[in-house]
Amino acid sequence: MPEFIELLDGYHRFRRNEYYRHRGRWSELQEGQHPPIMIISCCDSRVDPATVFDTVPGQAFVLRNVANLVPPYDTSGGLHGVSSAIEFGVTGLEVKHIVVMGHGACGGIKAALAGGDQGLPGPSFLDAWIALVDEPRDRVLADDSIIDKQTGLELEAIRQSLANLRSFPFIAQREAAGQLKLHGCHFAIGEGQLYVLDEESDAFLAE
Ligand SMILES: [Zn+2]
Image (cartoon, rainbow, N blue to C red; front, side, top):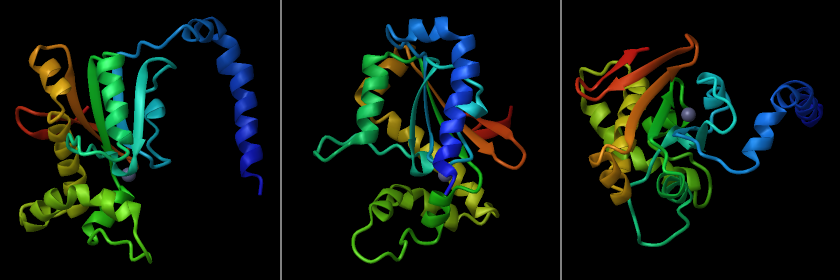
């Protein structure tokens, strides 16, 4: 099983190339991070935001989860990993932008379309998580004008995550004050094409 050795080979390439070339920057980064952007994307191995947006270390505070979903503001307890990262990014780091990046052929969205039940025995974290898009899924399935249900729900889930972000008081306040901007994007893997949501027309436009 050579996979971990390949990973370490990659680390040594990083040390020789990226780290060596930019060691001044790495030394500065040691003092702290001030990323102007937060990106919320899927765990999917094909859609690494650092690759798609060609970012440098320190530029983007990145949160990844299954299907790049944001839960609504909820103070009822529980282990809110996603909400705590959002809270830190916005109130701690004071990011100026939050980008929700969905993507084509998303397995989480596919599971939601298939009914959201993985059929696994016992409780499923994934089933409960994917239920976050039950409402947009039902909307997309009922809308005859949406032929491609997979892409349709990928886009609708991004809109839903943006709406849920706005349910966090510290986000709504900063957006109203012009200190924070929210963006929706969708990355089509095969074409390598990014679409950006124009909230005025509610359309995703090719970048
Ligand atoms: Zn995905």
